[in-house]
Length: 470
Image 1 (tube, rainbow, N blue to C red):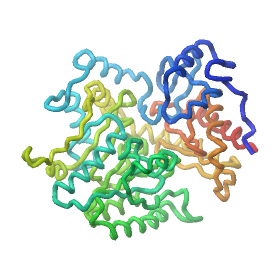
Image 2: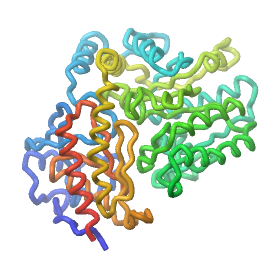
Image 3: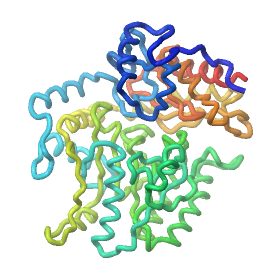
Image 4: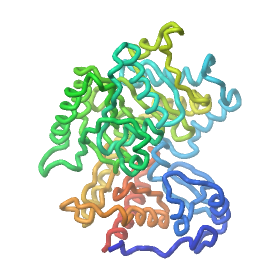
């Protein structure tokens, strides 16, 4: 049975609209004539209209009819300090007057240097080298290639395989897709992908009754230990999303897993790649999620919040020993030749520098801790709903798992698209919620207020009730 709120069609077809403001209609029609949107079945827009956005401010987005939407997901997890943040605006505008872009091979500029220096100061100690790219998937590609190339340069050419966790997501370029494990994204492209070793995730949603997060995560690590022991001579690196598998239904695990993994990678001489693209810069309660296990990865991938949500930029941070393995005479052909035309873009670097300056000038993590407590308290009220199996939280990330049978954790069939009904309800009530499957989640900008959290949680409650009322 489908949810009670099937909803009357909001748009009869791509060019005929029912109940949509004319100010939005014109742009939506122009868009649908030519634009192909990401992560979207475009046929959905026959009944679910696009929302053209005119401007943003703080946690709010505003369409061309003046309707506001609370951005509960930070526009795909990128925005930290609100839309149109005055400090970041000023930094980008000032940089625009000086230098918009320059080739980053053989040339450099102050924003990139300042950003690298700032990142080295705040990252786990020992990560002293910064390789810039232009998006998260590219950062993962860089880290994977760099690890493989490192082992080649030091003469251990058999180490060319990668270990990943089930339910993991690392991006959608072919290398990043290969080391991920969300079937929705990966299955169709499998013939194009390199073979990797997949180990069960420590996902604590699957813990046994009465088992703590730490106990479950420690128990699940046994399979990683066995894999590393068996294949160490051929493994280049293990790649993980520390603490939260975001695109994998916001599943979470305990920091003890990272601690055990770091120790095992050292023991078996395997690199550790930490993909903090989504969880870095305060999302989990610490500046970097790895801090909660007191570990340092060999490669740290950062993007999304790096620029405060302003411009595409990513960075891979690594160690002096890794850097040294590539530092040689040109004729040895050991150089790392990966490149992007917009590597180290000055505008993006200026936005990132301003973002990090906000962390230095303000008690962002302290304020987030208070907001996270309030958001968690309000969200846990939803556990009383009959079709909510779990409310889980890690810092400023909260996830609510809808289930057909909450007690047995029996999921709704994906074909029913329960989350889509929550999304529709959110738009009607002025909140941007974009569930992942059956999981409704909050990952708002850090400038959200308690009153705005109340609205966000209240609309999510209404959406869940409407989506699960059969």
